Amino acid sequence: MACKIVAAGPTAANQLPFQIERTILHLKREYPCHDRTVHVTKCGRICIGNRKINLSTVFAGQTIGIREVADKIWLVSFMDYDPGFFDEDVGRVEPATNPFVPEL
Image: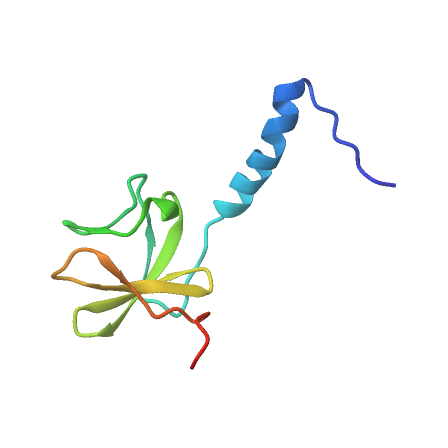
């Protein structure tokens, strides 16, 4: 027997998928292989001490993992993907190589 969702009005029916998606996306993620787990601000920044590193507003409200891969060079990870690296001096995340580009 399938579940039936009864909406209170036309607005409630439209909001339901958004609420479910928002709940799934905002689960707290853990990154055990990384040095730190950081929350991205509403404006898309990573705040580490007094430093503010610009990432992207796409990740606003999400939890990401960061790991130091070289001296003052950090790898940024979101879920199973590594969107890029940041240098402590530059203050922004530079994109990593795209794993979906076909090799020639």
